[in-house]
Image (cartoon, rainbow, N blue to C red; front, top):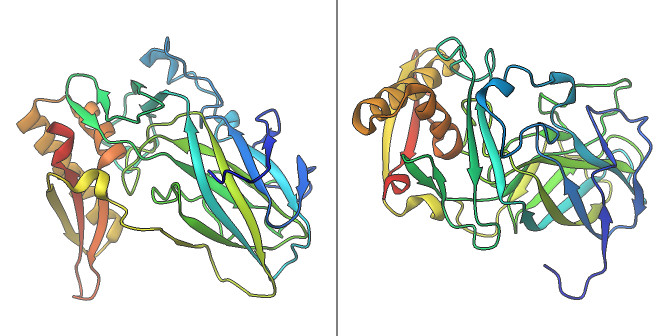
Length: 315
C-alpha cells in the first residue's frame, strides 16, 4: 500500500444491489484519492463457518452481489476514463464455494446444491485446503468493479456491462490498473464480490467467495472515449498456478459455449476417475482454480476450447 497516502474508508453499510445512476453517493473524492472499500461477499454475508448444504437452497437471490459505493469522482464526465489502480487487498480468512441449482456452465448436469467452506490464512495467503482432496493457491481480487450506466432505472448486477460491473476477471488483483468508460457525471464507482481465488471462467458460477477490503487509487483521463473496459497487469498472471504444469482437456465444435461445456465436463470426468472425487466436488474445484481458454476460432466450422487444470493443487 502507498505509505504516504491518506486513505478514505468506504464502509459496507454503504452498499447497494444493482446499478442505478440515481443512487446517492456514499462519498465524493478528487482524482488522485486513495480509498479503502469494505466489501461484503457475494452472498451478502449469508454463508458462515456454520453453514450447511441445506442453506444453499434458501439463499435469497434478491440480496446477492452487494457492491460498496457509489463514489462520486469530482470532474468525471461522460467521455472520460476512470483509471482504477488496485493497490491491495485485506482478506477475511473465510470463504465459500457453492453449486447453485440452475446456475453455472454445467447446470443441466449438476442439479443438486453443493457447498464447500474455506478457511485460509489471511496474512500468508498459503494455499487453502479443499477438503482432503487438494490445496488451492490464492489470488485475491474483486469480481465486481463498475460505474453507473447512463441508461435510467435499476439494472441487475449479475451481467457485466460496458461500464464494468460483474467482470469476474481473476487478474484484477493487486497491482493491476483497470480503465472504465465514464457514462454519467461523477462516474459513481462501486466495488464488491471479492474472491480469494477463481479460475478463468468461474465455471460453476462461484469462486472462493470471501469478504475483504479493497484499497484503490482513482485517477481521471479526460476526454478519451473507451469502448469497453481494459486493464494492465504489472507482470505475469499465472505464476501461482504454473509451477507443476497442467492437465488440459479440450472441447471441439461449432459453438464456443458447447465446446467449453465439453472441456469442463471432460475435466470433471478425469478428476472423478483419477482422484476419486465426487463429481460436484470436482466441478467446484474446477471453478476456483481451472482456466478456460479459447485455443482456436479460425478453422471453420469447428472451434477449440481448452480447460487447463493446474497440477499444483495436488502437489
